[in-house]
Image (cartoon, rainbow, N blue to C red):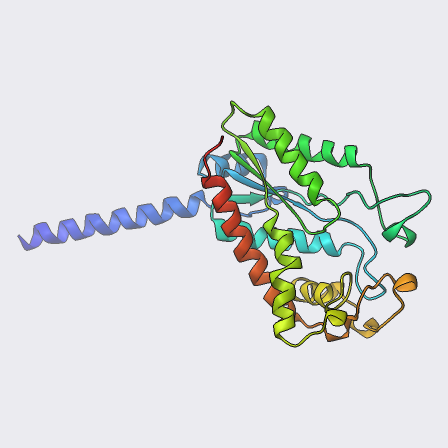
Length: 272
């Protein structure tokens, strides 16, 4: 009897070890597909990583104290954290070229060197082509998130078009507006709760924007250039001097948590 019990325990332990080894082998070396080989990506999809997140950033002026690629850095890092929380998702390369307004005559951010703007149609075409490529590869859910406000409507339009096109397919597209809505809503409220004024929080490259970047990529902020400046000449709308990584971390946690919840809701909602 004792020998029989020992045999059962040993068999149970072997099963546990085999299961753990299988799970480990199923995990891809990276959640970012540009860091995978095609066979590693194929195997990741086969093991259940069937959600792909397309992070959209943008290349634009962010004042004298913050790099032009701020949106790209944040979109990639946050998409990675969202994918890790989901457990079955991978991250596509960041879309860094987005509509930024008129080039000639220059308007908005285009008044400052380094801002890159492309036509709306070109932007939509890139997203549609990428999404169709991911469907072809075997992904079941294509998720679009955007770190900037000027193209949120375009992201929604693209997913609407793709879902009409894929009406009889197993793959669906999802625009997750909660990502940017959190940046503009819950994150701003969290900063107000910490005592920041609307002028400090600002609307572009001020304390909210700068703090979020500090929490994700500190080297992207020139701390010695944080100053209250004229908006027209500097591109900064608000006061960035109160920014800190600790304040930005509030935004990181809110964006990740709310985006994960929104993605799960979208995937779980039956297709009409």
